[in-house]
Image (tube, rainbow, N blue to C red; front, side, top):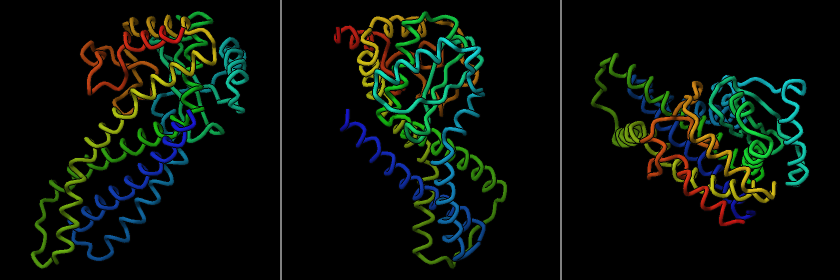
Length: 296
């Protein structure tokens, strides 16, 4: 587990560095396309660093807003609060994450934040209504494991930064083709090479982002399942919860492709998406159940 925590912290730093490089090249390409000259590189570096800083320190707020989440209350969600308090003690994590709720019929949950001290666990009203105490305990244990393992930092950084790159690519594509301006032929070869690299990253960045999400997500889910069983000492609770979540027919309205990997189970109900494959953000239900049963 400690090796995974160190790995997640390192990967987060690498992703932020790559993000700054990609955004710098994209913004540089945009500026050069509109003949802004040498100031392009200054604008690009400044913009990418500021964007990375905002994304890192506000990733939890951005994700919660994207999910239409609201704070949980002791009055409405006493059972949820009690479960979390007990698991915080048994896990030894040392801090209590904030609790948020999304008003949606589909049972599901996710955790986010840049570290345990700034962490959030978010559940849907469907999860609270359809799961019993031990099933809900298994799900909260799973999300608490993501927090303890620093998966949340990696996941939140990916969600915000990849989403931003996709948005920026879309804005640029529209603006560039609308402008229809031809570049001067007197650009030096260095500028031409950088602009070409920027164009390549502009095209490939969303693809790279998706592959990164897929590569990291499935391993994290298996580890969080196992850690939840360790916290609760009851793998059957999580097994039953995963089965109920997977079989529920409701769509999660606030979910999108940039946040899907964060949930305990895929929020999409397309059977083709739910099957485990190289493009899946989550392991299949059968794989997760088998892994949990092997822990008994």
